[in-house]
Image 1 (cartoon, rainbow, N blue to C red):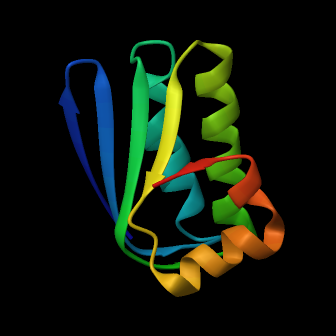
Image 2: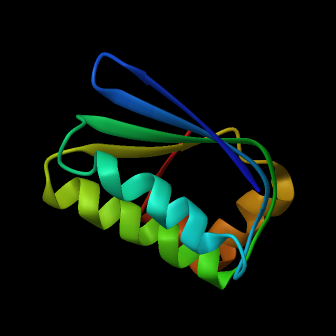
Length: 99
């Protein structure tokens, strides 16, 4: 997995590429934590995300909860149909902002 981080006007954009799974979930979790409470919002651009496992879903939900608790907004963008179906099946699509 590759994570490219951009910041602009208090919004952190994380461009995520590859597989978000048991092996890589901690990498994303570690990338997110320094920005919690220090940004007004975070966007995961998933245009190049190929796969997400339950470990990846845990990091996504955790990020959403931490941002909400600190007054920030969390958005997922550009989910491919396969990844979007995982969010739909698990019910995360009803909880998370997906654009």
